[in-house]
Each structure stands twice: as C-alpha cells, then as structure tokens.
Amino acid sequence: MSRDRKRVDVLVLGAGAAGLAAARDLSHAGLHVTVIEARPRVGGRVFTVHDPRSPVPLELGAEFIHGESAETLPLARAAGLAVLELPVSHDFASAGRFKPMGDFWRLVDRMNHDLARRLAARGKDFPVSEYLDSRRVPAASRGLLRDFVQGFYAAHPDRLSAQSLAVETTEGDEEDEVEGKQFRIANGGDALMKWLRDGLDPDRTEVRLSTVAESVQWKRGAVTVVCRGGADRARLPTLSARTMLITLPLAVLKAGMVRFDPALPPPKQRALAGIETGQVFKIVLRFREAFWEEPEFLRERRAKAGSKGLSFLHAHGAEVPTWWTSLPVRAPVLTGYVGAVAAEQLLAEEPPSRLERSLVALSEVFAVPRRELEEQLDASATHDWRADPFARGAYSYIGVGGNDAPRALARPVDGTLFFAGEATNGAEIGTVAGALSSGRRAAREVLRVLK
Ligand SMILES: Cc1cc2nc3c(=O)[nH]c(=O)nc-3n(C[C@H](O)[C@H](O)[C@H](O)COP(=O)(O)OP(=O)(O)OC[C@H]3O[C@@H](n4cnc5c(N)ncnc54)[C@H](O)[C@@H]3O)c2cc1C
Image 1 (cartoon, rainbow, N blue to C red):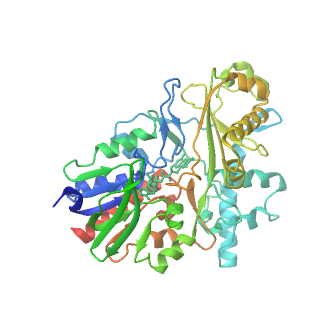
Image 2 (cartoon, rainbow, N blue to C red):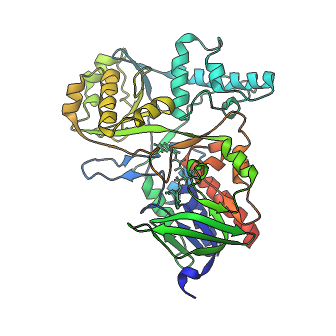
Image 3 (cartoon, rainbow, N blue to C red):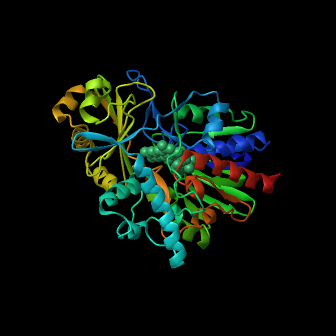
C-alpha cells in the first residue's frame, strides 16, 4: 500500500493555531496524524511578515495576546519566546489634541453590566445596537462605544449578541476595569506557530502544505478527503483516516468551500448560522523615522506632558480610527485598524485607494499634513482577509440568539468528525488563545474515542 493510501488516525483540516495545537497533542498521545493545509505556510490567520528593513516583525493578522490567563502566554513561554508587555496607554485624538482615555474603560465596563441587566429584564437576547441607541448611553459616548464594538469585536452592532458581551454585576465589581494586560511576541506570532509545528512528533505526523481540501466523504469511523494542489490545482491522491478534526475558518465552512458527503447535520448548520464573521482592515506603515517620538510632537498634542510614549490612539470619525505604535520596541512603524462596517467599505476599494485613505485618516488623527506623511512613508503592508479564500474574513463574533452556537459547532458528530477553531470557543471567540484551547479540547475529544 502506498503511503498516500495509508489510513491514519486523524486528518486535521487546517494548520492554524487550532490545528497545530490539536496535532501536537494528538501526535504526542501516540496517534498518527496528517495535517492538511491549503496555504504554503502554517499559522493561518497568524501571518507575520519579516521585512529586513523593519526592526520589528509586521503582523498582518493576529498581533496581541489579550490577558495573562490566556492559553497563548504559557505556550509562548514554554517555546522560549520573548514576550513583551505593552504599555497600557490609550489616547483619544480629536482636533489634533491627544487625551488619555482612562474613563473610557469604565464606559465599556458599564455597557457590559447594563447589557446583563437589560437581558435579565427582557429574558431574551437583543442586538447591542439597541443599547447603544438608548438613552442610557450619553450622546457624547455613543460614537466611541460604537467604534469600540466595531473595532474590537469586528462586529456590526445590529448583529452582535448583547448576551455575548453581558457581564453579571456582583457586589463591588461595578468599577472593574475591562482593560487587561496585553502582550506581543517579540520575534513575531509566526515563531509560536513554527514552534508548534516543530514540536509535532515526526514519526507520527505529516503536514501537507499547499493542499486544498475540496470534499470529505465520511461515515462512522472512516473519513476520506479529496484535495487539490500545485499551481495547476491538480487532484491529489485521496487521504483517509478513522476521524477528522475540522479547524476551517467559520466563513470557509459557511460558504461550503469544502463539501461534506453526507452533509453536516442540521444542528451544525444552525450553529453556523448563529455565529457571524467579522471583517477587519489592518494596515502597517513603515516610515523613515518615528517622528511621533520627537518630544515636540507629543508636547504640542498632549495637555499634560507625561513620560509615556504614544502607544494606542483612537479617533472617532476618522475612516481608520485606531492606530498604534510598536512600543515597547521603538520602531518607525504604525498600524492602522478598523473593523466591521467601515472596514467593509475600505475593503471594497482598490488597494492604492486603501493606502491613500489610510494616510488621509492618519493625517487627520495625528494632525500632520498628508504630504509630510507620504514623504516619510517608506513602505506599507496589508492583507485582505475578506478576499482570502482560506479565511474569507477576520474573526468571529456571536450573533443575536447565538450564544449556544459555538458549543453546538464544537460538538463531535458520530465520534468521527471533530471541530475546533476560534469560532467554536464562545468564551474566547475571535482570538488565537481561543483557537489554541479549542484545538486542545478537540484533541482530548478525539483521544476519548480512539484511545
Ligand atoms: C487582521 C486580524 C487581526 C487579528 N488580531 C488578533 C489579535 O490581536 N489577537 C488575537 O488573539 N487574535 C487576533 N486575530 C484573530 C486570530 O488570528 C484568529 O482567531 C486565529 O488565528 C484563528 O485560528 P484558527 O486556527 O481558528 O483559524 P485559522 O488560523 O484561520 O486556521 C485555519 C486554517 O485552515 C486552512 N484552510 C482553509 N481552507 C482550507 C481548505 N479548503 N483546505 C485546507 N486548509 C484550509 C487555512 O489556510 C488556515 O491555515 C486577528 C485576526 C485578523 C484577521
């Protein structure tokens, strides 16, 4: 029997954070695993560009590790990677003035508690936009909260589940700050993905890159998958296994890019419908100099001259409203970020127009003439995740009434099809941490069946 015809224990579909974490645990537990990955690289939506002219790696996909308890931080430490804690410094920019946004986190916190109260009173889920449009939200804060929901969750407020954000108030926690610690992997997020891949047991694992799964035939205890590969997208020999672990992005599954025969059962279709795909436009700009680090720059814009450098800037009304620097590493790199409605509008433009509009937005936010920015600009990098056939979007959020959908999506089918990926993790949806822990959870489920 040729190697291609060999039946392994598990076929893992997708070599992103979820697929790699799962394959690692499965292979270490003694199972034979083949990972099928459409791209010529591992990592999926963790996509780091190493530009020899940039002192920092450029992250076109995931960048931040949110919070200390996340799955990512312990793994990054185990991998011996340098993890940098970001300075907690957020400024609002308006009319060329920067103001610390300390109170804003209280506003977000209040929103989450208010949503829980409304939910208890109503007894059923509702869109977050209803709260944002209500009188409970001061008119002056409405736009900022809308920006936050669209930027952070990449969500349309009229589709985002209130229940998914609601935080029950327990005595004394009303003043909790939602803003947690944030970290970045100094060598780039791809270093963690590489570490996961390098840690796969070589005797029991095979990673097939540039291999696009097209259709899956399955019955209890047996799965075969038809793939295409190479420049000519030629059909590759069929792969087979006892089980399959599916980590395809939500939007790829929803669009039916991989056909299942028989089709995934109705509860899976309902689960898919309960989760939404968020869109993001992220652009990294490399300048000749970090002109925003000049003492004069901040002195002219901040009322109180503090020692803190510029880290995150938020401006309501700009087409690209959120910008950040590479602090704590000093580098002439700025990143612009916008989610949901405004991102979709920008992604509908041709690439040169996206760059042009980003420069106009930055010029507005920084109060620096656009021409000067252009003179300073050395290079830019961005990735269109919406047009990417192997992602079809940035990350997931829970739709109205969809709170049980991630769990339903995660549930195994007939002890044969298993599911992981950020969209299957309701508590940490839309994150690398969520993807990693979903992969490990699914690996445990497979092991319960096969071991
Ligand atoms: C712009 C942007 C910014 C982000 N910022 C952050 C952040 O700061 N912090 C954070 O925690 N998260 C962030 N995220 C989200 C994070 O990247 C994802 O939640 C996480 O990487 C998803 O991992 P996954 O394994 O679930 O999916 P993926 O990484 O998408 O892995 C799925 C894999 O399946 C493959 N695939 C698709 N179709 C096929 C097919 N037909 N055949 C074979 N393989 C296929 C894909 O190529 C991919 O490698 C960001 C995402 C984006 C896009």
